[in-house]
Amino acid sequence: MKKRVDLPEKKYEGYIFDLDGTLVDSMPLHYRAWREALARAGAPDHVFRADEFYSCGGKSANDVVRFLNERYGMHMDAASTAADKRRIYLEMLEKEGMQPIREVVEFVHSLGDAPKAIATGSAMPGASRTLAAAGLSGLFDVILTPDEVEHGKPAPDMFLKAAELLGVSPDRCVVFEDAEPGMKAAAAAGMDCVQVRRPSLA
Image 1 (tube, one colour):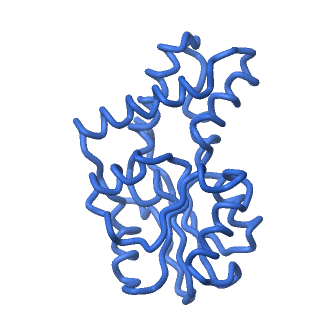
Image 2 (cartoon, rainbow, N blue to C red):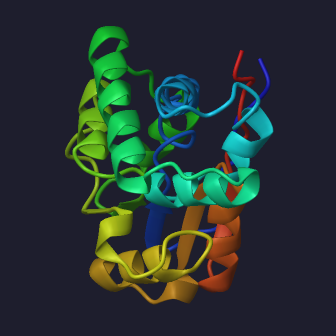
């Protein structure tokens, strides 16, 4: 089986992880929830294919709807469509559970008491319930969502805030990410970044 991640040999003082697609294999579930929510909002079937979905990795749900409205000339209500997507995702999560990404989670456990944070594009309670479903609750010192910063990924705000809350200088932190917006955010924050490679959505 192809390795999902090349773990760093360098030691850092702070470790910051994306959640979806990095710690847990939640992206297929999120994609299905988006497809259902967009269909209910009246979006044509060709809207939000897999490549668009992954290009939005790390963005808040409201920002995703605004992106689709702009790209396709639609007028979906961002707040209600995003809320519908989150509700559908939580229903699917409760029925189907969640699998952690083994290589990354084993690395998290190996870090012991080193400062660790999650900086995710998912809102609460979705993030906490995803962690619980994957058996990962209590492993992280900080969990940051887009509601807690002015700008989500690809802006550096989330990672800089995570470093601040961990009490670690940004240049002494490393970020684990699967999506381009998150990797751009890490670079903008002046942090090293480890890419977690994604499997197919199929």
